[in-house]
Amino acid sequence: MSELTSLTIAAARAGLRAKKFSAAELAEAHLVAMERARALNAYVLETPERAHAMAKASDARIAKGEAHALEGIPLAIKDMFCTANVRTTAGSHILDNFIPTYDSTVSSQLWRDGAVLLGKTNNDEFAMGSSNETSFMGPVTSPWRRKGSNTPLVPGGSSGGSAAAVAAHLALGATGTDTGGSIRQPAAFTGTVGIKPTYGRCSRWGIVAFASSLDQAGPFTRSVRDAAILLRSMAGHDPKDTTSVDLEVPDYEAAVGASVKGLKIGIPKEYRVDGMPAEIEKLWEQGRAWLEKAGAQMVEVSLPHTKYALPAYYIVAPAEASSNLARYDGVRYGLREPARDIGGLYEATRAKGFGKEVRRRIMIGTYVLSAGYYDAYYLRAQKVRTLIKQDFEDAFASGIDAMLTPATPSAAFGIGEKTGADPIEMYLNDVFTVTVNMAGLPGISVPAGLDGQGLPLGLQLIGRPFDEATLFSLGQVIEDAAGRFTPERWWA
Image 1: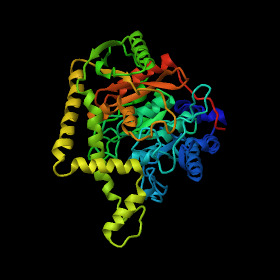
Image 2: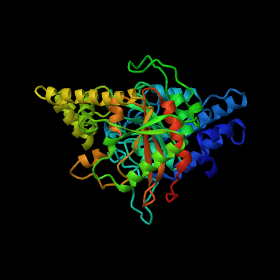
Image 3: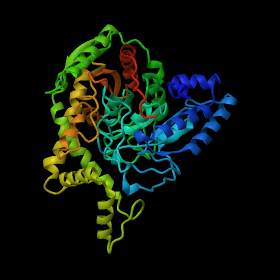
Image 4: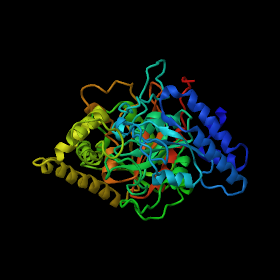
């Protein structure tokens, strides 16, 4: 059974069509693996009955020769995506028992293409976090461990459950959302591939909102090819989302393995931050050498407003969060705490329903949007955002096809190590990723090596708007050179 859970999506697709095994067998192998790996807390809800029914339907379509693009492929869905008649909590007590009557557009497109739902994965509450420690359902434990240590490590966040599930072979692929790095950072921490597409490439409809101008859905997989396969099903125009772009979705898989000879790859000098570990610098240089060997030309570029990205992000994102989370009032759905009047109802429900980090960000967001502070903080942050976007536009206008950077400033850290009194220490994990969200660009994290303690590290590629195909071509070069990484099983 473990052989089935070790397959890539591409290999499983081929095996299903060749009838070497059935979709039912593939789903069952994953359900057994999930049951044995509950110590990781990667899933907050397992859906075995749904998985069996969907796999049975896939087998019937395969038998008739009517297989779709993802027919019979078992996937995990981040608990930010609404799933019809399946509990969706966003990792929060305030949505503890919320059962949507509809699917998000992204998940409905996966079911349209024949995918099988294994369950809902854990995430930081309302996707607010960089370690998957703020979830009401408890932290996710990474399947990776340091050499000679049993210290439990974080899988990254906010999409830590999805990353852990894919890394631990509890799903062939998973969905995530990325607001400031919440796909790419956990992908780097867990040795998986994670791509944040261009803003507008995937519909946001039916995804619980954090910061609407930054949120974007994307896939986690164990290979670049699998990411290309999954993104093609997830992407596409949706008239229900006004930010969704009406552009044809390319055949991303065709770009995997394409020549990168002659491409110009930018190396942003501002990404050499103070205190960067030597092993991150070494990894970056190694990635540069791999791409040069494949025929790409490396060029130093400048993104002068990079140093302002993190503070600007932590004004814009909380401001939008404070607006989006105002809908959770104890009246229409979710948790309701009894009170004497409407004001008391709001106060009691939100005090009990929201966790500490969510309350912190709502308060920051409300403050920067308040009278007297709007111009000083929020408006200024939006101007900085425009300058960050202009930096990227200027670099791409000079002939750059993509950029190469580290994905994270370090490997995964221990659970509880950065949840002290200073939240900024945690926020610094997003230093290499937030610029991509602020500019609305596509970015992919590809496993590129292991650190001195045996933990995975990733490299990030940043592309032109709606040019995810080039990122898949470049990402395959890194994957071919670095290989793939799998944690040693300790949990079952």
